[in-house]
Amino acid sequence: MQPQLPIDVDPQTGVWTTDALPMLYVPRHFFTNNHVAVEEALGREAYAEILYKAGYKSAYHWCDKEAEKHGISGTAVFEHYLKRLSQRGWGVFSIVEADPATSTARIQLRHSSFVLAQPGKHGKLCYMFAGWFAGAMDWVNDTAPASASRGPRAHSAEAQCAGEGHDCCVFHVG
Image (cartoon, rainbow, N blue to C red; front, side, top):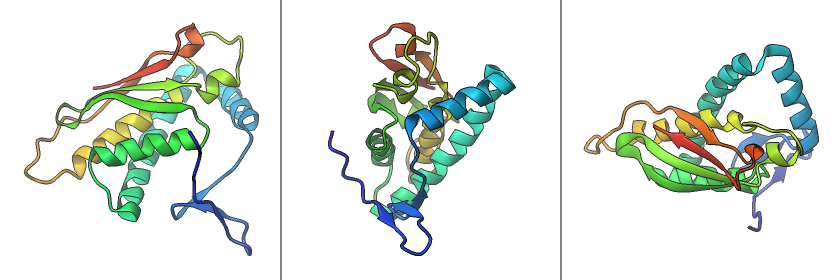
């Protein structure tokens, strides 16, 4: 996958934008070290809950802005979201199956940044992404035409992780 992201840097402020959204660019180890430090300080369960809510909100916002920017809608926005996540170095995401009418999906993640940055660490390391997929699915449903069948509110969880020895991570939305 060749990243072809439009990155604009404001010469006055130094702010980076992609698709009109402000971005931060940090090394993977920096982000992961901060992530692990907060997880250790708060405990994994409390931190996962915070990340889920924040990730849900952020994904929903992102989908709204990107749909407007690119003139796309429905599941195409969810697919675009995963493409952009993949292009930004989080890993390589793909939708294995998705049904907005039932708010279900299965997302596969290969080369997760969390697994790559923590060699030798075992367990479900990629839980941070779960809220992102629920937020994207709810955006798809909330913006569907009135005539469309809308599914219930989505929930997402990491079902398997490459950090457990699997060949990829899998998330279930439902």
